[in-house]
Image (cartoon, one colour):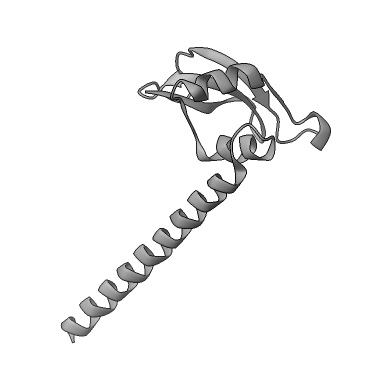
Length: 115
C-alpha cells in the first residue's frame, strides 16, 4: 500500500519535512516513490509549505493513505473532505476515551482484589 507521509530533514531543533508518496513498508527516511511538496513548521505562516495538489489528488484517487498529520493539512487546503475527516477524528477520540476509561476500571479492579 502507498502512504503519503512526512520525511524529516533539517538540523536539530529546526525541522523541515518533505511530503512523499512511499511504500508503507519503507522506513521514515527511506526510498521515495514521488516527492509531493514540503512543509516548514518554523517558517512564516505564508511560506510554511508547498503542495503539488495535482499529484496529491492523483495518489489519493489511486488509494494512497495519508498520515493523520497530512490529512489535517490536506483538509485545511481543501484537498480532502474536511467534514468527513473531522467526524473520523471525533470517532477516534471517543474510542481512545473509552479505552482509557476501561483500562482505568480494570486497574481499579486489580487493586481491589489485592486487598
